[in-house]
Image (cartoon, rainbow, N blue to C red; front, side, top):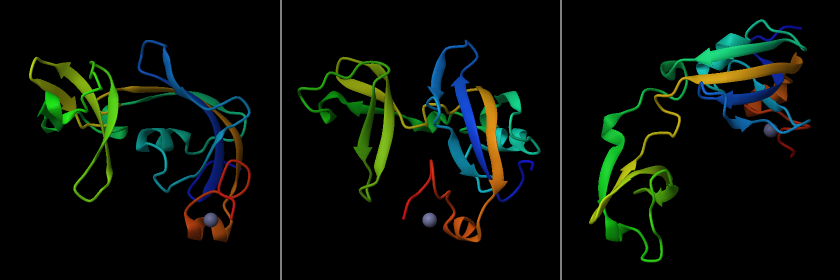
Length: 161
Ligand code: ZN
């Protein structure tokens, strides 16, 4: 069976940003399971997997607009140094999570540390990046009606109810 809308797909994957340095990957023997066509993975990768079958391996290069979106300059914000707890020393590259107005988690990255202020970036860390995936399809099967209804994979590597 081939990867298409409504199939449950198990993939082994690794991700780098063009320099070969792996920044994310599935664990050995622990493939990522997702329902194809539901937007669970970045659009560029989902499109590239369409029509593949178990055992197929593919290198996929995903442009930012088909990945985590372009980098939005409005996401860069300068906040006072004392907005950080006194015992915390922000350094460039550090990632933190703040609370938004509705109590939601707002992850951000420190991009500059000045004397009185800190510049943070609210964009997704992979926004504006070209993504290089190495993917191997491990298994393809039809999603059950229940899985499609719930919008997630059941069983091994998925949800247990
Ligand atoms: Zn469920």
